[in-house]
Length: 195
Image (tube, rainbow, N blue to C red; front, side, top):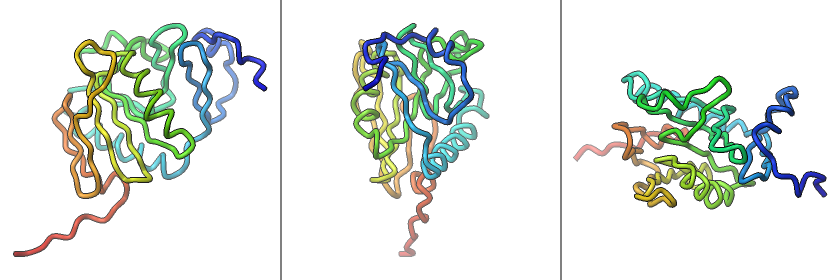
């Protein structure tokens, strides 16, 4: 049993831990500490490809900056997350602080792991919407699909704005981009047929 199960965690508690990096992800969801194991090699390959694609298509055009975990996104003292990838719009420079971000980036990306699929699909979806992230991508290596969600007016939930599978090109409501999904998952290009 966790001796801290009744403890209300804050960002100050995370800073006080200040131990050696252990490869795990530490996040706080409304005062609850959530620790995730180190990502797999396949997970990191997907993150790497998406990071490079977003840098090429968004950052190099001056539309935003792209970053990857671990980087704290501090929404409040008891709400701290580390998305796999995050995109800070060029008009959001004020949220950048010494130890992370204070406020919501425009776009967050999570690559689903089998051990935390419900966490990413349900809990983080609600949490990111409440936190004001305008766009949330759920990347599923098992189904080789990417779900793109956009924040609804009022900012308490998401609506689906795209669902992409093999052979599709990922697009975004926030940025002018086109990322071939097959490349994200290391799939071969679709064969072309000459009529």
